[in-house]
Image 1 (cartoon, one colour):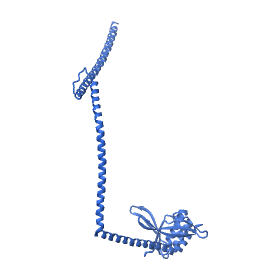
Image 2 (cartoon, helix red, strand yellow):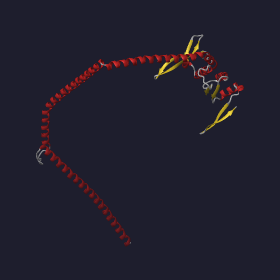
Image 3 (cartoon, helix red, strand yellow):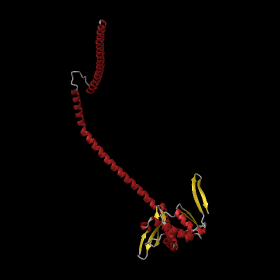
Image 4 (spheres, helix red, strand yellow):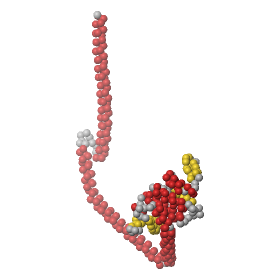
Amino acid sequence: MRYLLFHRIRDTTIEAIDDKIEKAQGAKAEAEKEQREHKRLSDETTRARHELEGVVREVAAVLQRVITAKDDSEAPLREHIAGLDSQIKKFEKPLQERETQLQRIEDRRQKMTQIAEVLKEEENIKKFEKLLEGKELQALQGGILELESLREILDAISKATIKVQTDLAASMIKNAHHEISSYYKTICNHPYYENLEIDVQPRTVRGALRNEYYIKGVNKSESEETLASQKFSTGQMNCVALAIYLALAKKDIYSHNLRFLILDDPSQNLDISHKKALAEILLQLVPQKQVILATHDNELQAILQDAAAQKKPVIYRLDEWSKAGPEIRCEA
């Protein structure tokens, strides 16, 4: 019993001592913190005092007098600033007068510069007038006359070339007009504009002469016409292009020794009746032309094979493609 009581008293005493130690350590830490803050404030006070002393020395240097602690630090500065303002006001009027004088001098300088430029131009005019009186002017005038004459000749040649080019194109269209109309009616079979007319007009584009072709659909019975590009569908425009191209080929307008035609996918936007009409015209050309036609249109291929069965056309199929090129298979 005594032993237990002793231990309890000892434990209580130890806890009280620990509390006192903890409080003492907290008080020590707080004291150290206050000591550091005191040192910081002391250092800042010392630095501020040094800065103030520096400012006082600068003010004293400006005022050219010693400033003591008894002096009002702002009063001497106010007096000094008031003195400076007074001196500035004394100089303002002379400065304004000086600026006015400088502006007058600048105005006179500009006028003198303009006069000098005029005199220089007058001198150049006199030199040119002397040149006009000499042989150099006569040679110059002769060269100008020759150039003007050459320009007139070139203009005449250009106009003649334009006329020849336009007349040649119009003549080719006229010579093939019957075939163009026939092929147009066969391939296109337009329900209203039963015929075509083509006007050729010269036009200069970026300095180069070009013939411009105005293709018109015509209804002669009702005296109506329209530009094909404005009212024809894409398929009808394709029919017009094929009719003109094939008609010019038939008339050998742009013939060559090899005497062949190449058509690349000509059935775009064509329905089956147009494709059949195209096949009919191509077969008419075969006796005098070798026709090479490339297409991926299975319907057109079938139509051509049926129509040209007796002529035994040669068919080449392009199958698999590789880096070396397509695999070509011939079907006689």
